[in-house]
Amino acid sequence: MPGTVAAIDDASDVEGARQEATEAEIRDLRRRYRALQSQSMAAPPPAPVVETASTPPGESDKFVFVRRDGTVFFAVGYVWEEGTLRYVTNQGLRRTVTQDALDLDATRQFNEQRGLNFRLPS
Image 1 (cartoon, rainbow, N blue to C red):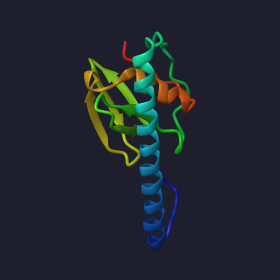
Image 2: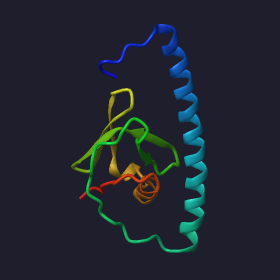
Image 3: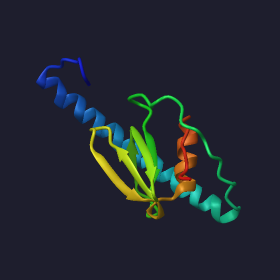
Image 4: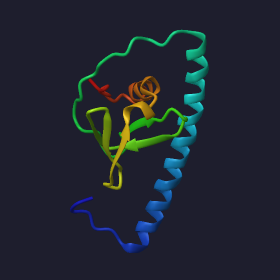
């Protein structure tokens, strides 16, 4: 984080705690994804709602993206370009994934549950 000074010894402790929190988040999201899948088999999915982006997410407010295979990943920012999601990880890495590799209904639901305005591709 710009302007933040931290001791090198403390950085490894913080990174370890962040890794544990991320793994716990992923386990929880996978459990909720399986629950969503079983619900969607019983009832038709709700019509998608297009949300407009508000303010950029804070440190703890990361967007969640769910792949069709059930894996999840997080982003601090994203943009849709010609059927491709371009996103930035918490570590500042830029990545891409095709729209058809994502479960957009589950992605939308997870982000709404987190209180984030998720924009579907247009």
